[in-house]
Amino acid sequence: MDHRARPYRSVLYIPGSKPRAMDKARSLPVDAIIFDLEDAVAIDEKATARALLAETLAAGGYDPRAQIVRINGFDTDWGAQDLDTIATISPQAILLPKVNSAADIEALATRLDARAETAQTTIWAMMETPLGIMNAAQIAAAPRMAGFVMGTNDLAKDLGTRQHADREPLLTALQLCLLAARAHGLVCVDGVYNAFKDEDGLGRECRQGRDMGFDGKTLIHPAQVATANAAFAPSAKEIDLASRQIEAFDAATAAGQGVAVLDGRIVENLHVESARATLAKAAAISKLEQA
Ligand SMILES: CC(C)(COP(=O)(O)OP(=O)(O)OC[C@H]1O[C@@H](n2cnc3c(N)ncnc32)[C@H](O)[C@@H]1OP(=O)(O)O)[C@@H](O)C(=O)NCCC(=O)NCCSC(=O)C[C@H](O)C(=O)O
Ligand SMILES: [Mg+2]
Image (cartoon, rainbow, N blue to C red):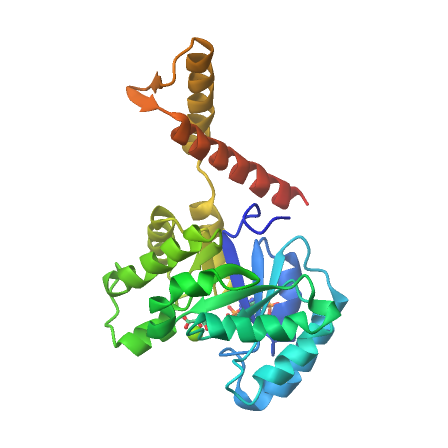
């Protein structure tokens, strides 16, 4: 499936060191999984997590969920070995943490190009450093790029922001990354909500992310999945409006007019494009949930 056509409402991180959690994910209704070898894995567990993850992914059972592996950076003791091990199972996508520039992506792409097993592997970038945010457009345009994941914890740390429920200190960075992702046809998913037992707070942040234009939210616990799936799916009202906009525009076109009027508002070709995208997203979600 084309990476922009598939839903990414819920993108769950799973530590590569936790076999029970990796097993549980085979039955969770998530759109995508990030199998993590980076920050969720303690230093003395890095090697065992890497081997366990390769074995677990080779065993499979995660389709139709999108599967992304977050390796450690190449400036650490583990990044090169992570890639060597994970490459053997032809991963769908590699997520590179703390990306600062297009050169970081090009270096990973060169390593992937050198192996037959990773011919189809795409690259996702963690957008979580001030330099990375400033270089978002060139990173989005780099080879093999398919998606951005906002790393709001690292970003807040580097910026020295205070925590605000409305995330005001982070909004410029979030919007810059969305702009760059959309300009280059990438998926863009929002950062995690750390208080995983606070359903109301998560719901608010998901709605904010959806309003901004994110495709979905990264999650840290299964209890967060339903909230994200609901927030990032087109609502029944949106689906109804989209269908009626298409109908009204088709009728106007048949009558030789370029613009329709529905519920007191104009409907032009660009609105019909959005309406078709809404219906396509709803259909993709329905297909994924039935698979
Ligand atoms: C947050 C947790 C440490 C909580 O763990 P725990 O106390 O074990 O949770 P529960 O007992 O409530 O778990 C219930 C069952 O659910 C399974 N589980 C828990 N978490 C996950 C998960 N992420 N994926 C799949 N399954 C999960 C447990 O195994 C239990 O199963 P069972 O026993 O069979 O019923 C824990 O949730 C956790 O470790 N979460 C992931 C944390 C993580 O990945 N952090 C790194 C990513 S966030 C990040 O790095 C952001 C970014 O880089 C930035 O800068 O912002
Ligand atoms: Mg991070």
